[in-house]
Image (cartoon, rainbow, N blue to C red; front, top):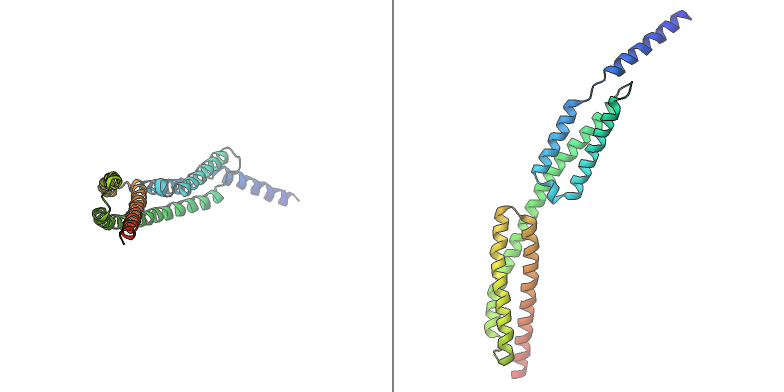
Amino acid sequence: MKKSMLIFAVVISAAFILGGCAKVPQAEVDAANAAIVNAEQAEANVYLESEYAVLLDSMNAINTEIEAGKGKLFKSFSGVKAKLAAVESQANELVKSAEAKKIAITEEVNSELEQLNALADENAGLVEKAPKGKEGKAAIDAIKSELSVINTTVGEISQLLNDGNLLTAQSKAKAALEKSNSINAELKSVIEKYNLKKR
């Protein structure tokens, strides 16, 4: 009986020593934080805003858990290590995803710029074919003004791409393309109606 009590006391003492000496996994914390910084530098916070917010929430929850663990008599951070590894992995994935998204947006905007340039030439030709009567002249002048604004916007979009302001470039390109297509359809409709009347 005394022997078993002695063994029990030794086990309890060992648990106290091991539990009390468990250290915060600082290397893993540092690695996770570094991965988050890399994700931010890759602009994951801009191009993958919700995913990046989830990542930060996960890290904040881990930090809270670590702080709570520091105050415990029997410290154990084994579960925290796995969570930190997961955060590091997620942050690394966000870096890849952010880079892929930037490439996709750049390709999309460049494609829209090509369409805008083609439409600029086509619309200029349609303007020349449009009826120039009393009412028509005012409408044509308004269209020419709109086309001039679109041409200026195309230059701005190219500059935004060069500056890395991809989301703004994407937004402006979509709006300009929509307007340019609308003008194109309007001009074609006016010319078609005019030609029918002439027959």
